[in-house]
Length: 223
Image (cartoon, rainbow, N blue to C red; front, side, top):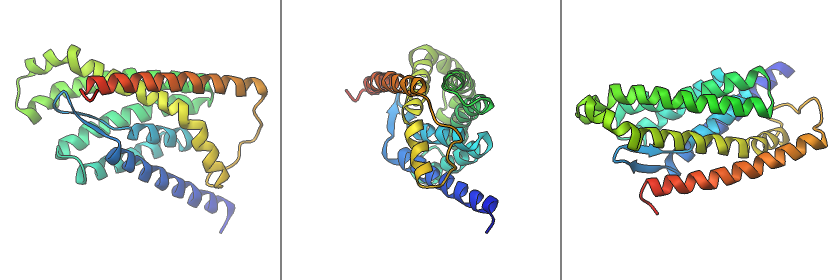
């Protein structure tokens, strides 16, 4: 087996592992029935990390696979749920990874995640306006009335929480995959300044995760 072929096999193995982890997060860490029909699940965190490592196209393929498994396991919304889940995940994963892959720096990752969050909120508002009346049998005016009290805050909290967790976990996941030899070692070493910046980023991300998760739990009526 050539080095190139071996590298591809390892990459596929890593993507399969990340896809399985995303499915597990989707099934076991979900918060359902927010506002009566919305569900938060952290699968986009793992899918975005995978897209940051392997690129936007593999990220979208993993997203579609996870959303399909969700449809045939825990979801009760059928093909409409598959479409909505893939739109949400695909936009978040795709936009963030396209921006990050042009230049792999912390600042580009943050810019990508912010752009992905805004894009996902806009796209999901549009598609909720189109699909929710079909799925729930309510007039479109009723969906518009849900924009400010429910749909915008839910999607904003979801996107912000996922973005913060991506920044918190990305380096640890990459390090674990490198130690497992599933992805190549980096070519250059980080300097002390970069390590300090990373530590600050981890602390800030952890605080953001805790805050947004608390808000989401309160929003869902769990606390």
